[in-house]
View 1 (cartoon, rainbow, N blue to C red):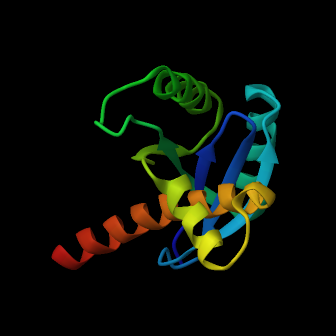
View 2 (cartoon, rainbow, N blue to C red; view 1 turned 30 degrees about the horizontal axis):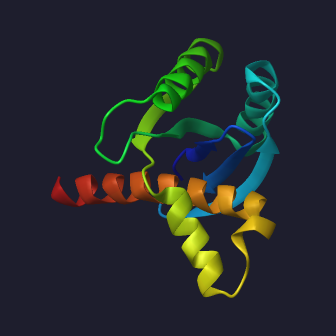
Length: 144
């Protein structure tokens, strides 16, 4: 059994969370937290890390479409820096470009309005971030 990995989509209003299965193959939605500041986030994450036996966080970093750094990128990196200082787990940064748009398209394809499903969209964006990481891990293991 592998350590569980928590995927995080940090937003200005909400934080979408996804969790890997025990084997490290699949990501599934966990919960959406309201943004209440870094201190509240650290407290929530510590509880989830303990409850779910999480050994690693994968956090989406919002680069511009050209792959450059923006003010939002810097804001997220500051939060990640604080999390690295305060949480006892490894933190991996992943490019999150288009994950929210992909999640919105999934809901649209199901005939649901994205505007009425923001919490679920944030969770699904976290699933896409985490699943991308898990797929990379699997690909690397197959090469070895």
